[in-house]
Amino acid sequence: MGVVNTTPDSFSDGGKYLDPDVAIEAALSMLRAGADIIDVGGESTRPGSLSVTIEDELERAIPVIKGVHHHARDAVISIDTRRRRVAEAALSAGAQIINDVSGFRDDPELVDLAREASVGLVVMHMLGRPKTMQQEIRYNHFPGDIYEFFVERVRALEGSGIAPERIVIDPGIGFGKTFDQNLFLINRLNVFSDLGKHILLGPSRKAFLGKVLDEPAAERRDVGTLAAITAGIVRGASIVRVHDVPPAVQACRVADAILRERVAP
Image (cartoon, rainbow, N blue to C red; front, side):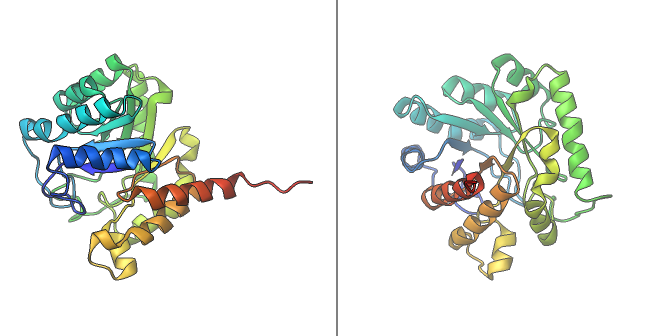
């Protein structure tokens, strides 16, 4: 999954894709490099970020989705949003997946839309809100609280009529987790496997990598990202969300080949 943030304030690529033409070409380049999904977002959810208006989110994201769909009809596109109006416009423009960092809790009507449109859902775990999620990180039991969150969310979504096979879970690396908890989640990703859902992992360029690498610049954490996604694939990730697609595609292919390897008798 290649990331295209059409925002001025995302932690890594903020401002880079404000021009729709630049964003569209970046997405097409990711597809040519081997990305399976393009994830377009019009609202930053980095730690400390504030909500934007629906109008701003629509103005940023929808032209990009339309453009990508126009040039690559078979492209799988996800919209990173918490709002039904934005998701509805995105689906009309060509998106097929709704990726909600709130785990489909913020806007109940978003669940209705997902059911009506029969689209894919990415259900992410986030502790608190983007503005404050890294300020008060408290769990009764880690990662048990996250596991129970997914149990509840899956039960609620399937109970609302969402087809089980359309639900993907994302533990939310960096969304209300400490440095150690992020590392723990990647290394223990397989604890979520018995939920029977595909797992998405999104560690790309995040602050915990900066701490490991002693690298303050997010755009210089791509090699560290490759190590994190490879570890995640080994632990059961089905989808990895990245900013730099070409090397990530290579890492995924090698990890998949190793995992498929069997010694002949």
